[in-house]
Image 1 (cartoon, one colour):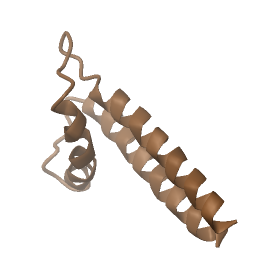
Image 2 (tube, rainbow, N blue to C red):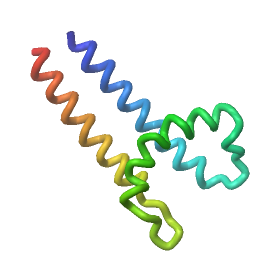
Image 3 (tube, rainbow, N blue to C red):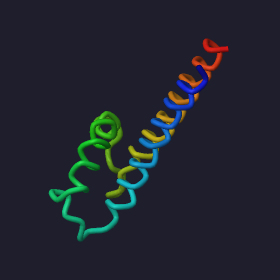
Image 4 (tube, rainbow, N blue to C red):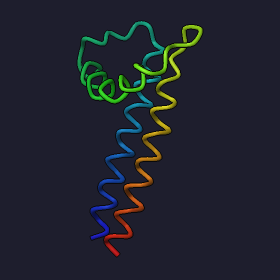
Length: 89
């Protein structure tokens, strides 16, 4: 049963990594986002990141919303995994 909690934790970790990758790739101006696999990466991560971009405007040309998004993702991950581990024990 703990495998379920580990699997969900791995999904959260994968999504965290994809967001980090998206952030780093956004610093490379020559990336052509309309090509694969970049288009898929952008589509998958921007669904979540756009939630925060609506509320946190860029400051001096820098987008700080991914930082807040990552912090919220980690908090949600910890709450869900903690709850699952308590339920499954």
